[in-house]
Amino acid sequence: MLIVLDTNVLVSGLLKRNSKPEQIIDAILMRKIHLVIDERVFKEYQDVLHRPKLNIPKDRADAVLSFIAFSSVWIECTPVNFSQYEIIDEGDIPFAELAINKNVILISGNFKHFQYLQRFNIQVLSPDEFLSKHTQIF
Image (cartoon, rainbow, N blue to C red; front, side, top):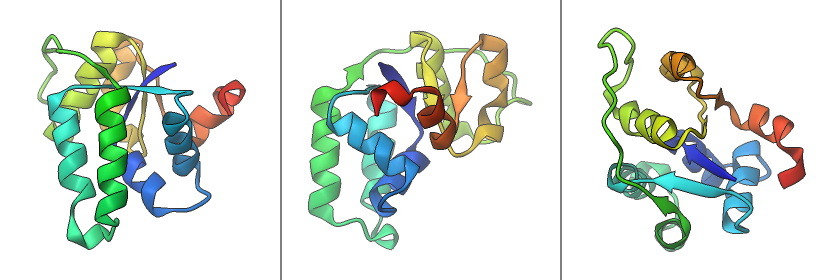
């Protein structure tokens, strides 16, 4: 299964033991789920996971990033024209474009940031919703 994973879910999965986001990270590490990424998203993952205030051990962050780099489906996105009124955070655009370009689920803790994806028939699910809908993976 291919998905786009918002950075907030990745961070939560690394910080919160026995959480729904951690279950998703574990499924990625076990290759039950594959991420769709591009350079922009990978760079954001790198920048955020290395923020000192998050206190993610550098070796853990680097190991996860290396795994993501080698196991993900890398694509070059066709840009999507969104209305300026739809976008709450411009940093969300790469995630939205990936989901649209590959027609895959986007997992995010910020549903309201991606409500406009409904018009593209893209599912935006919270970690809990994703796990509930896709129990066969876990």
